[in-house]
Length: 299
View: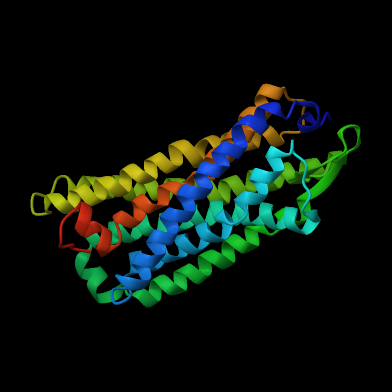
C-alpha cells in the first residue's frame, strides 16, 4: 500500500497546523491553568463529584498541552521529527489518553448532572466525592489500558529522499496495518461510540426534566444549557470528525492527498477539546457559576 503521508506535500500542513496548534497551546494552557487556580483557591473546600471529575480533565489537558510545542516544531520543520522514538511514542500515547480521558470524564460529568437533578434525594444520600475519586481512578486505568497499544504502533520512519524523519502511528506492512486498523476500530467503539450514546442519553433525560419542571430555577436551566451546548460543540468539532476520518484513514487502501490532509486537520480539531473544556468548568465550579449564572446552585 502506498504511504500517502510520504507522497503528499507537507506545505499545506506546514502552513496550517503550527498556527492551529499554537493557538490551542496558548488557549488550552491558559484556560486550564486558570481553572486549576480556581480549583486550588476557590473550590478546595467544596470538592463535589463534578469538581473531582473536572480536576481530572484539567490534569489530562495540562499533560498533553505540554507536548504541543513538539508538534509545532515538527510541522514547522516540514514534518521532521528530531526528538527521538521515545518522545514520538509518548506524544502519540498522551494524545490518545487525553482524547479518551476527555470523553469518559465528560460522560461522568453528564451522568452526574443527570442524577443530581433528576434524583436529588438519591444524590444527597448516596453520591459522595469518594465515589467520584474511585470512578476517576477506574477511568484512568481503563484509558491507559486501551491506549497502551499506541506505544507499539507509534514510531519514527526515515524518508531518505528528503532526509527527514516522520513520527507515525503505524508501521508499514500488510499484517501490521490490518491489526492497527482493527485496534483503531475497537477503540472507536469502546472509547467513542458507547460513551457518545450514554452521554446524549443522559442529556435527553436531563433536558426533558429541567425544561418541563417549573420549580427548577432559570439559573439552573442556564447551567444545563451551557453544559449541553459545550459538550455538543466538543463532539461536533473535535470527537465526531476525528473518529470518522480516522477510521477512513486507517483502512488499508490508497488515499488521495486531500483525504490525508483532511485527516490531519481533524487531528488538530481533536486537540481543540482542551480549549472548550473551560466551558464545562463554568457549569461545575461554584466560583465560575457565580459569575455567569448566579450565586446559588442546587448541585
